Structure formats: C-alpha cells, structure tokens
Image 1: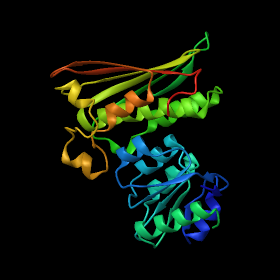
Image 2 (image 1 turned 180 degrees about the vertical axis):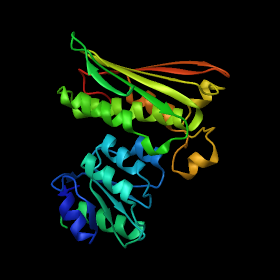
Image 3 (image 1 turned 90 degrees about the vertical axis):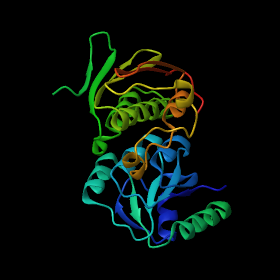
Image 4 (image 1 turned 30 degrees about the vertical axis):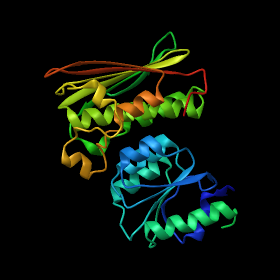
Length: 116
Length: 154
C-alpha cells in the first residue's frame, strides 16, 4: 500500500480538523473500531483510526499506540475536554460526516491507489 | 503531590502513580508518561510503545476491577520494570484471564469501550516478562518487564 500523509487523507475525506497534531505523518493503514481495548490491542503504529467514540480516552489510546490521526464519524461531537487533551498531546482529532463504512471505503481506496 | 517522576543520582528514572478505581477520565496518564520518559532517553519508539501499552492495560485493569491501586516504574539501562498493585478482588482463574475474549468486567466498563478480555493477553504480547501474584479478596500485583535494547515483537 502507498503511504499518504494525514493531511492528504483528511482533506480527501473532507474531515474537519478540530485538534491538530502532526499532519505530515504517514498514514500506514486504517483501523475501524469503537472498542478502545480492541484498538489498544490490535491497531498498528501509523494507522488512521475511524471511530464513533468521543470520550477523552481516545486521546491516550492514539498517543500510546502512535496512530496517525482519529476520524470521528457519524456526526458525533467531540467534547471540549477531549479536544484539550488532544491538543496537549499533539494528537490529531477530526470529525467527518461520512459513516464509518463510507470513510473506511474512501481510505481503503486511497491507500491502495496511493492517490488522495 | 504523590504522582510524578524523578531521576535519582544513579540515573535510574523512576515514577509513581496512584490509580483510583472507576476513574476513566485519567486513564492512560501513566502510559503516556512512560512513553514520553522512554523516548526522552532515546529509546526506540517501538520499545516505548510496548511498555506504554502494557502500562495502559494494567492501569485499565485497576480502574475497572479495583477500588484503588498504584503503578511504579523503574527505567534501568536495558529494561523497564512496571509494577502495578491493586486492592481488587483478585483474579479467580489466571488461565482463563490470559485467554483473549474472556472478561469479568462489569457492564459499565464495556459501555465505555473497555473490558473486552484483551488486557492481560495484550500485556503478555507487549512485554518480555509478566509475573502475576494474585490473592482472592486481597488484590493483584503485576510485574511487567520490557527490554529496551532490542526491537521487540510488536
């Protein structure tokens, strides 16, 4: 799979960046899950994480696992507490109106073709 | 303040954290601090991540299952030792608890996206040594060691 930057992928998804970390990071893969323990166990460094979760625990999981960015789908709103933690940790959080299915499909095609 | 890290004269970095049961808001605090401390000392990101993931899982187990607990870490020249002690119910069946998907977590933890029965197996996967000392009705102590000189098995 080709590697795109977080900025390229997020712009193509039309995701709104609500907490900005390092957008030059490579997106090496994608993980879709709403179970935090599942993400902590099975995601990989550089993955873009697609989730409905907005609880502040998503920041620590993203930071510890070295995920490239989080895309919160389904129109869910991220709380100010979560945003503050993300900014402090340099974690990129975004919101996206697409469903998890649609967002994952877009990311899959982008990473497979190497074009945003 | 009890929590934090300090460097002793022999350049062994140590940290101590208290963990309160049910306090999800601060989950990952110890793990994030450990990752930062290791990376600041030039340890590879992969090693730092393995140690931090192990610490995170142990921290979650205290938050989910116990009234309270502590996490101590000591970073030596070639490994980090993370010791997590809790005042919890103890682990009824360690063999089952080491099986992916086996969970005794309450519904409220699962509703928050935790408690899927992946914690202890994930610590084992991300560490080089895991010792479990558990006593029913008294609590559990985990000694987790992660080597810092090799690339690990991420």
